[in-house]
Amino acid sequence: MHRLVAAWFMLPVLAILPAQNVSAHTGLETQLDHVTHEIEHRPRDASLYVRRGNLRRRLQDWQRAKEDFDLAHVLGTSDVRDELRFHRARLFSDAGQPDQAIDELNSFIERHPRHLIALRTRALAYEQIGSFENAIEDLTTLIDCDEPQSPEPWLNRARLWIQSGDTDAAVASIDKALNIFGPLPVFVEFLVDAELDRESYAAALAVLDDLPDVLAASPRWLWRRGDILNRLGRSDDASRAFIQARQAIMRLPERRRNAPVMRDMLERSAAYGAIPE
Image 1: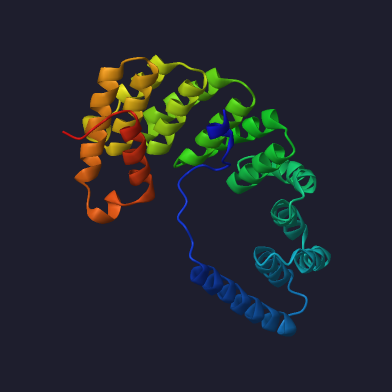
Image 2: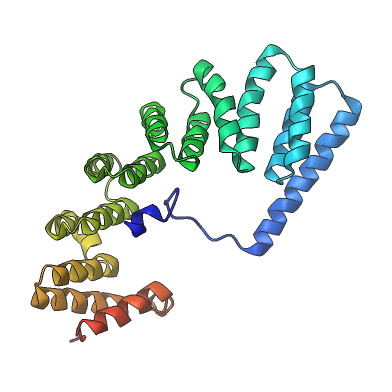
């Protein structure tokens, strides 16, 4: 199951260039200087310490962030102190201290049971300590509360079911998600991988058979179809699928055709004896 266990939060992530990271860091530093200047004029304003603590958290200055939250706790009202449980939990989560994050969030979520970020944060913390059942429960609550719905918790919950050994629950959940969100590639990939991991090759092929024609004709799914057909021992059908995949790749603009993933598919399909017509 290595393909399914490998990634937490598997939705596609854009690569962030180093220059963008530097720019974001500089922006946070500028905000931090501004808030610090405000604190000099309003040193008993708890909300300013909350703001600065979160900026320091994002800058991974854990100790100073905690000190700001402690000051906000001393200066703030009961509402501010309640809110600080959430902010401290995010600090602990980001700092790699999931047990402390859970302690803070248990109290906070008890009073705010539909707080989406708190539920997501606690689910991650539960996963980090290996408490998959609790993580799944929080993700289920998150799914029930989330309007408009996001595909992320559906995928994360299914992945945790896989890790817990309940592939049937994972597959059923993603099947339902497909009915809500449509054939998102990340869901299709998950289902195909799940069925292949338990050697249900016919079921994996059925997932691709259900794709709309315009998607089924993409190089990605044509190549996967060829791979599955080969596993089923249908070598002639597999070869035809690989040929179609190669032809579809060759029709792409040069930049896309030369992308590493496309070149890899071309090389691997050639290994199956698929030769363009």
